[in-house]
Length: 397
Ligand SMILES: [Zn+2]
Ligand SMILES: [Zn+2]
Image (cartoon, rainbow, N blue to C red):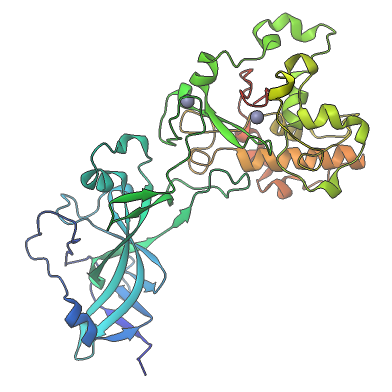
């Protein structure tokens, strides 16, 4: 039976480098492990890098388990402590050690490639269209000495079509795609849902690069602010502000936005009389021609009576009426709000609002908890309405 125990490695700063076998130039002093050497080693479930020295507050040790992600200083790096996004990221698939030499601890690592790494392998691949914390999960493996690991890394899969995608913080690596190293092929490319055919790059800081998300079951698409403007996908009543206050059949923007709900199960719906209006979220004048109207049924979107807003906290209303946006050009909290935007929190706010309206109930004192935000942070997730329309369903976004 294989040994399953923890092994220790006694240095604080990595002293060894590894080369990735895709790297063109081997690094001086680096050592690689052959498959034959690996095969003779014993398996372990974890290893420790660094040591805790009594009385030394600077001392630090980190334990790594099979299944953890780790960051590694790239071979040839000018700095021993590069910025987080400049590190190599790998998933520890297996740990082995030389039974006769406890300092020889190695991990089999599955690499997550940066866009720059992929660009080195693929012609006509534009690495500028991807985030600096973005990685591509690959089928490329190498043996890496334990001392090369700097720290644990947080890595998540980013599903852009998931309205409830949890926040991705600024120090979390994420991947939307996988990279087949053997066939030099990318799978699951980010879907280019905008009119321009260019996918979302969370790092673009221009305000025009903000993406507006339409959560409707028939859409679930994101559009660049600039592309919506170029296509004149702008609310007519918004262009002529005065008309907003005239008694017309146009549903006010704030109502359109708060009713723009993601999928809600049919059992939560009611009031069939409202279904035509509420399942399209648009007035007749805003609807596309009949043959192009999205085939949305009452079971796909919520139907809720919106009679009164009197019992609703103003901050909840403001959040529910915010456009769903994402990107570095937004005013959202930079530490957790940029990559995934405010989509999930606004969706939760709209659902809570719909529930309160339907049940004609008061919001609980701690309603912010169900949105998943501290009370004082609610307003930081509200983005200004720019009067834009979804080109697909013509709803406010
Ligand atoms: Zn676009
Ligand atoms: Zn839409």
